Image 1 (tube, rainbow, N blue to C red):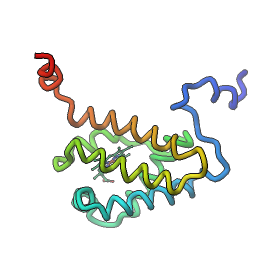
Image 2 (cartoon, rainbow, N blue to C red):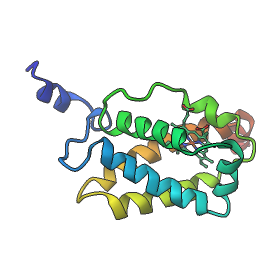
Image 3 (cartoon, protein in one colour):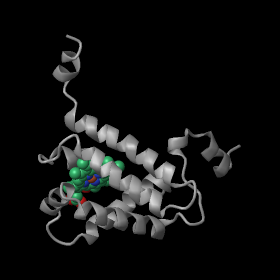
Image 4 (tube, helix red, strand yellow):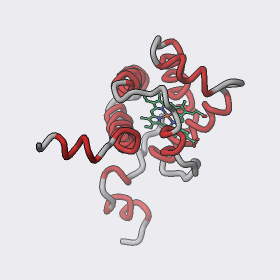
Length: 147
Ligand code: HEM
């Protein structure tokens, strides 16, 4: 029972690595580049990223490849702090997350092998939800709804 494969199966689905012959770092790097290509062309998100990423995009794309390898392959490539990276972005509005997720969904559906897009989308939605809460949750607004 201590075999790594059975240890994997005992974990909740979101903690399990995706094991698929086509889904490796090279694949994730291509998906990340496709997705950020769309983000950069987006009229709303493009300028937000352009303001933050002044120089070369390559370090950001490599960092995002590390991030997605950690999320999907569970290989520990990424060790950063996504929350402060986003709470400092004053231009971002809550609705921008829907736009971001729309591009992510389209890229994953177009690029992923059969049965894999759902996992990428599910992870993106979960993480987006926590980032969104970290950026926009206000207690007075939440309790205000009850009054
Ligand atoms: C409206 C939605 C979003 C906007 C406008 C946005 C924008 C940005 C920007 C401008 C950066 C800084 C780039 C850099 O300095 O490298 C960044 C970093 C990052 N973003 Fe987002 N983001 C959004 C949503 C998300 C979501 C949903 C995820 C995850 C599923 C995500 C994951 C990350 C990560 C991991 C970093 C790197 C943080 C670090 O370690 O420095 N972002 N984002």
